[in-house]
Length: 295
Image (cartoon, rainbow, N blue to C red; front, side, top):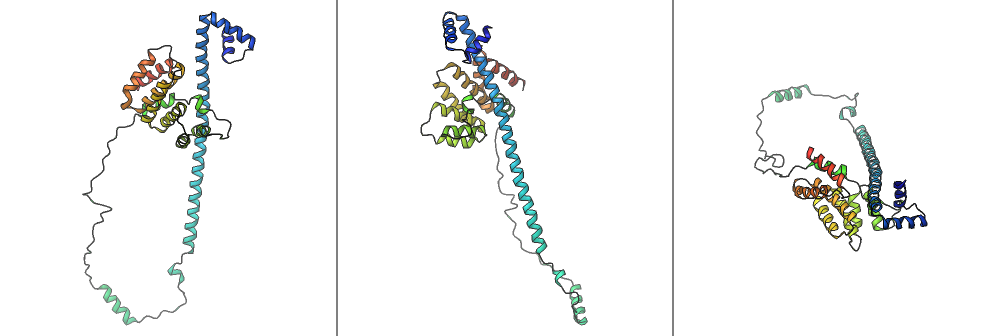
């Protein structure tokens, strides 16, 4: 009964009189206050998880539709090319078929013998002075060497599986585009990350909100250095504890996907979160750490 009452209070389902009475009880009961705070965190995470699942499903459907459109266009182009080639070859005249079979060809037999003798005579072929094709083969050309550290695919996979879009970035007012920010959100939801970034760059004044949005875009684009810098910048300027813990969680995922060069930052954040049982993402970080250690 008490938990149901707390849930109604958090979801703002109480009437004015009941709400005032409940808030007076909160002021006088510290145990009830802690219980309300814990329940608020649980409900918030449940809403975010449900919303993230819906978004991922919509993104998958959008990706499949995009692939089907691509396959359809390629198929139409191939059919058109085949038709053009058939039409071209059917119109090409063949020399053997253009001759008149009834036409009489008179050949002088003496000239024919002379031609046969010439054909049977030995011929000396002079070697041609061909220059080597430097475009196709030149053993003296240096080969390019690429030194690149292999990607940490397992870490990136774990990070993307744990990632969910924040609620503030997935909200779009219907299907209309009423502002630059709404346009960026719509493009982000459709996995058009570069397009979303262009919208944000056209906003006259940069803000903490737009920087946080850009950090998520860079993360999804695989530009982990830029994403990490923005996550750290936003986290330093954030004064709400719950929001700062959320940003720290995304910074952890970014460091995990980044790989070896970000391992030190990842270890520090793992330690900081797992040593704080009151952290909003304590359980998520502990579970993720076990998976990282298993790989």
